[in-house]
Length: 140
Image (cartoon, rainbow, N blue to C red):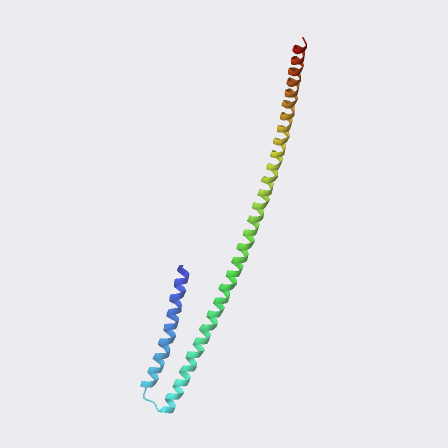
């Protein structure tokens, strides 16, 4: 924010300088004791000087603006590249975590199946033993 405020003040000072120079030059010429022809020539010379100064300040301002634009482009390109690197790293990390989670889930399912099968076999054996015992009791 501070740079924006400073630039605004700088522009105001620059505009004030040019306006003051133009008005001061014009008043100085108008109140000087000269003939009309001399006065017109002085006005022409002074206006040319003011225009030349304005053009040189404008050229400097354009150069600085171009420099600022180029710096901004470079900084934004750098930020985009850094952001892309960080996003790629995050995506790689997310893929690793997801892959590890899949492996763990698969192992958990496999272990669960094994336990269910083991317990199922025990339950089948117990039910069969119960049925056999019941039949044996019924027959006797």
